[in-house]
Amino acid sequence: MPAFIKAISYYLPEKIITNQDLVGEFPEWSVEKIAVKIGVSERHISAENETAADMGVKAVEALFTEHDIEKREIDFLLFCTQSSDYFLPTSACVMQERLGLRTNIGALDFNLGCSGYIYGLSLAKGLVYTGIASNVLLVTAETYNKHIHPQDKGNRTIFGDGAAATLIAKDGFAKIGEFSLGTDGRGAENLMVKQGGMRYRKLFNDLGKDERGNITSSDHLFMDGGEIFNFTADAVPILVENVLKKNRLAQDEIDLFIFHQANKYMMNYLRKLIEIDKEKFYIYLEKVGNTVSSTIPIALYEAKKENLLKGNVLLAGFGVGYSWGGVNLKIS
Figure 1 (cartoon, rainbow, N blue to C red):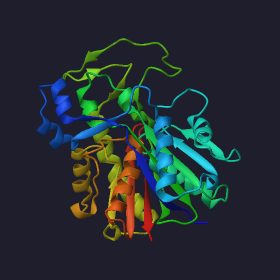
Figure 2 (figure 1 turned 90 degrees about the vertical axis):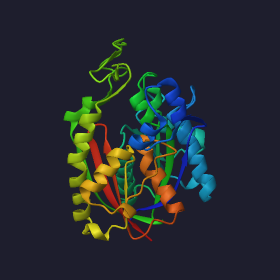
Figure 3 (figure 1 turned 135 degrees about the horizontal axis):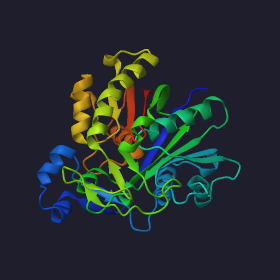
Figure 4 (figure 1 turned 120 degrees about the vertical axis):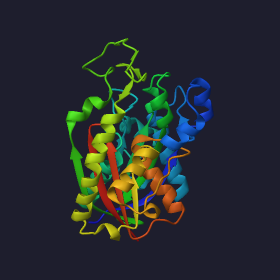
């Protein structure tokens, strides 16, 4: 049984932080520097008491309303986040009740970052393909800004909060093709929130600066930008090659590439490295920032709205873990 993406919607928090706001806090930066290097002019930030599950619920409600979907049709809920409401229970269980979904459905959380949407599509396809479920709700939501130290200007320029909801079913506008997935835990410490889980339960209180003056703190999100860049440059070209091979396609048969929207510099570097035509490489980053697992569905939604989806669309997600994955969509 083939599986399709049937509908996508997304939600962004009301609060907006512009580059001008950040320059007001960090006058050594300039609006132009942030825009040119990162490619983001503003990002949405979750309210103090607004969680990933709250945003996920709003994304699903938008999906139901925008696409006239009956909630009783849903028979599985997958929720991807790295900022869950609780250690237990899973947010997916709480969301089932809040959304008024049936009780005879499956619901689970999974913890992944920038590759999360691709992995979620693979799980949803498996559920539909095997007949376990007919209408799978894949929700991605992240509040990375709650992990970032207020003085960490680098990460604050990159990340925005947001959520997306995707319906995977037996029919739809995009047939989900074959996947290529990868994992390398040797890079785990290069993008990490060390404190807060069971291994390190107490605060480190080790706020400091690295040799370049960037904020470091084991109690907040840490990202080694150089190592992440090197990993991406090594892994993504091979990932694209493997997705093409598994789907028996040549690169010139791909009509649109939608990568995880990491930042403008990295995306343009990858585009040139893989020799992708600029008009075939979609970027939707300026008004939302890097929303982690929601960047790809948000970009898909916007590309569809612009009537850019046709033929073959190659998706690629990569980041924290290290974890990466790609898939081809056949647009009907």
